[in-house]
Image (cartoon, rainbow, N blue to C red):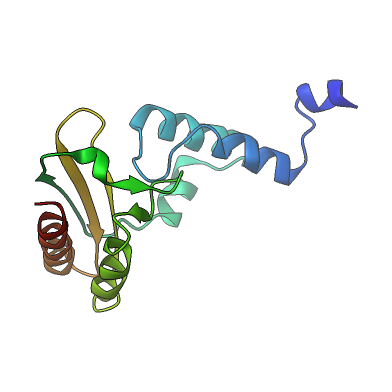
Length: 143
């Protein structure tokens, strides 16, 4: 019944859906991320020691590119892909494909006239270079 589901008898898919609504995986709001992790740990009976053994931090770099009009950059709802300008996402994907364990996305800042650039790589040097390369492309397209 719907009352049982509200009382904590959700199935695995409903639990995952409920937790996913707490966070934005693209920007990583710290408070909601902690709440989501603590919730999953409680539901799955995972200790802090168990959790520490599951996690490996990837080298990453976050930077920003100053632009005249940040509203020119539009993203998917989860902010992991650029939809406008249309040529930017293919460029990002090409750059990512050259980096071991590479991942990168950009999004317009909510508070500044800039575009935030996030990048990961197998090493800090690779993450830094990927962020720099993506940032240069953002600057070229938006200047």
